[in-house]
Image 1: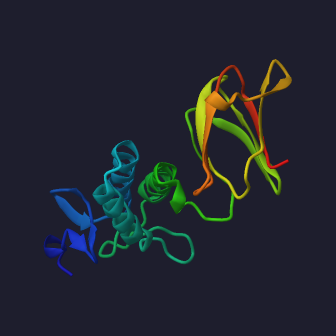
Image 2: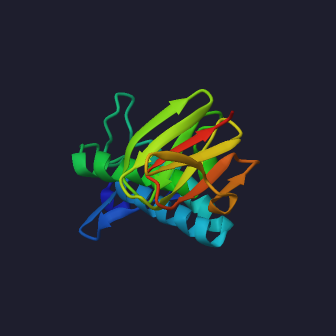
Image 3: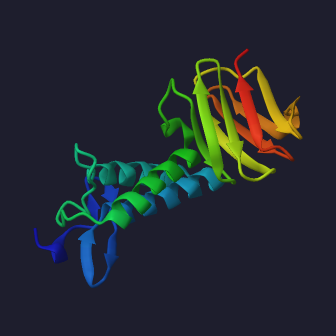
Length: 189
């Protein structure tokens, strides 16, 4: 296919080129576009932005080969490490944090944090994680109903107050706000 004639909408997805001088439609740039639409949906509830994100993420997912290598795009099948692994994957993760129901159902995933996560441990009856900053917030999709949320402050585990977390029971999405605590334990018991 002639790159100059490569359509900007493919299979219902908006696709993105790197620049006017390079009109190849690219997985990394398209996944960035999708993540921005997902974030816009999260902030505004704009269903059209969510649909754009969904379609563009799906298109971009076809750039990943079965062996894990990520093509630049459907026409340019070369590999760019920075685009295929530094950007591409990060945008999918950001999109799942903005639309948590896209994270796998029946699994627990820490999807977003305002801090660097230094450790995470997924267990059958809960999840533990540690952050580099004493205050921050996280978004998780859980495979269990949380009954207890604890945070460590000065080595002591204390209940996280109900004003510092929200749970969407239909999607099992938990949003936690930490204050003066780097370690969090969320339990089903």
